[in-house]
Image 1 (cartoon, rainbow, N blue to C red):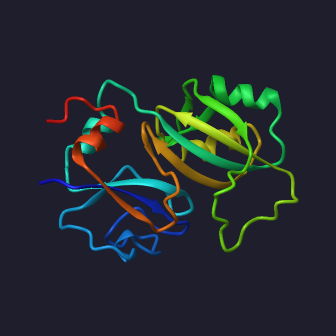
Image 2 (image 1 turned 180 degrees about the horizontal axis):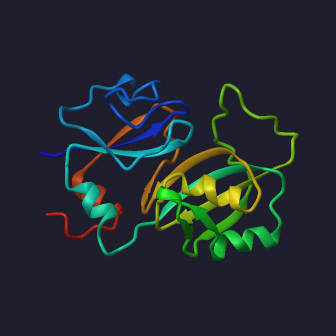
Length: 199
């Protein structure tokens, strides 16, 4: 019987159970008794936070990221300085970023909007000062190149100060606190991810 979880990956934690070259805290250090054979589906880098899927089902990565149907991933992003309407439109229509091997890649059109800082957002221990000009963006992608969101905002001359994945399709982070773990029933898990051929 496979099991399915979402966690709220905290800042400065690796998306893995076994140590890597980066060092740092690991998912297995969370206060939860995870089952044997569990692994993360997709990754969030050390400095990113938010929704991460864990499962014992080895098919999930292929079903979610290698199928014909693209799946939306939404990120709450704090960037330095005020984002102008022109730069917002650039992000929406596609910007050029460097990908593996040094090649240039133009990102596909995506949803981007300026939002207020969510009231329920937990501040980090060292939060950048709120009085310094900044913008909160909500960005929904259907692709996931390495560090894509960070590279996209850098391409329009904004530095990413905080990056939180808040949803993958219908799976939402909601009010799950940093370090929190939520187990999800199999049928609900696949329904929320809009994957129908999982049996």
